[in-house]
Image (tube, rainbow, N blue to C red):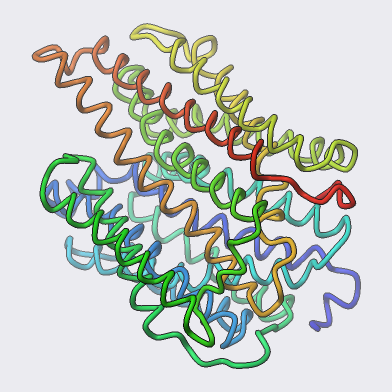
Amino acid sequence: MPVLLKKGGRWLPLIVIAMTQLMVVLDGTIVNIALPHAQADLGLTDVQRQWVVTVYALVFGSLLLLGGRVADYWGRKRSFVAGMIGFGIASAIGGLAQNGTELLVARGLQGLFAALLAPAALALLTTTFTAGRDRQIAFAVFGAVAGSGAAVGLLLGGILTEFASWRWCLLVNLIFAVVGVVGGLLLVGESRADGDHSYDIWGAILVSLGFGALVFGFTLAEDSWTKPSTIGLLVAGVVLLVVFVLVEMKVKNPLMPLRIVLDGTRAGSFLVQALMGTVLIGATLFLTLYLQNVMHLTPLLTGLAAGAMTASTLISTPILTRLIERTGARMFMLLGPLLGAAGLILLSVSISPDGSYWTHVMPALILLGVGNAFIFIPLQNLALTGVANRDAGAASALVNSSLQIGGSIGLSVFSLVAARSLAAAGPAASMPDAMTGAYSEVFLIAGLCMAAAFVVSFFMVRPPKAQPGV
């Protein structure tokens, strides 16, 4: 156990681990605002511009389960530090890129090392805070940070793009990397799974190809769901994952032990996490499009405006963390989706071509942010409660995979909805009225996704009554 941890600094590892998760999540959105500037600077084609976002999600999502098992066997601290160093190097390559190819390679490497880093970080949190109120607080803080990462990425991306350069949207990760490596080495204790450390090679190949096909397929579906390439990838992804499950039932040392997902509360938590991904990754993009294309806000003001959701999440988290001890996690998992759905539906009906941010947007974002806090305070703790130490990395990888797959689905569905709405407007598609109508439809469907999260929580998420804070 690290010396500083013995001397009472038990919360210092939490700061390092939470900061790491923030970096991984915000990197999915921080480049969104900077993309037009990067495209102009490097001469990217429209296809290359799209792949700057896609390649990160593709590599990250497809390798997460393998990364979780590597962390379990190789050592979670070792994986954490190695992932942080690799992520920092990849970010430097991207920030200094001189052409589109270099930038795409850097983003792919970021996804690779994030797939090692993210499950290692969450597994370390699981093994560092094992029970009691400390665990509850630790997961509440971690969840609030993770849930705010997408919006923080938009804010930070806006600030860096406006006052520095799009390159700093990548180079800023070097600061996170240095702090993470030093903090990881000094403050975090090592842990690894005991027993058999043999790798399930076929399982790793099948799940990586399966998740990769799904993420890529949903990305192509943003343009069309009916193209043979889109249908083929989605079908291939489903088939590969079905075969993966069959293999996991037979092998001696599975990559993903099915005992992780057979628990009803844990499975429900994974589903809620996926539905949250559709909102945090998918709907957030269309919020920025409304703020920039209709309200004509600068990148900086767009980030600040979206920050109302993040601020309400972070402000409400300390209050709600104390409240959960009296109400229990189930109440939070029911109230959170309802508040989130109400916020998104309010946003859908409130926005207008000439509306005011203060009266038509911000109240809905505050409501959504508080709903997010209700969900994320217990969500990841529920998803990992009762998981054996041996499976901590694999279960943590599933938590992150759920968010990434949900986000990919959300982006593709919402993009299709918006595109069809704008196509129906014909020549007026570029007018504020048409764009507002399209974004309104997106927010309405996102609200329905949050309502679905309530249904999942109601029927599946039933934590033990003897552990009200879980």
